[in-house]
Length: 168
Image 1 (cartoon, rainbow, N blue to C red):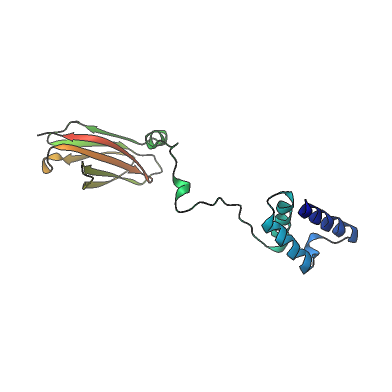
Image 2 (image 1 turned 45 degrees about the horizontal axis):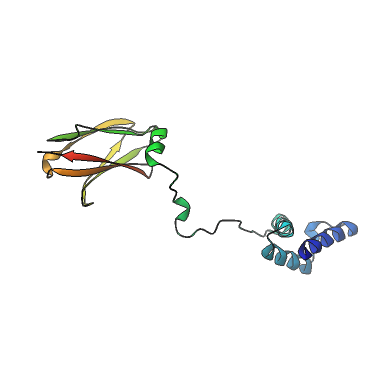
């Protein structure tokens, strides 16, 4: 309440003397700066507004987010997001014996994407860069052992993973 009264008194005093906010003396600017940094209420908001508008100060109302916390969200389903963007990848046949055909569709504004194939232990077996809006990549599965593999289709930094079984 005291801060609000100080700001109100300053404002009334400026109006009574016919001065504008750009004509504050150093004492008034220091007082506003103190209120701007210490008050989250109306007085602090008004002080920050005046200092930013007339004196080139900058106050960040940013969230206190460390590392990459702002990018983590359990609410976003990559498969649904890719579907909404027009991303599509199918693999046929599955299970595969000698080869597997990856048919893909990319959004028009996407230049390239990556198909990353890993084995059950997480070791990368193959990485294929795909381009264009539609296409097919045929993978010769005779070069790997039978088992469970995972393929991740990464488009615009968003990956969607599914399972591929190789039989002999």
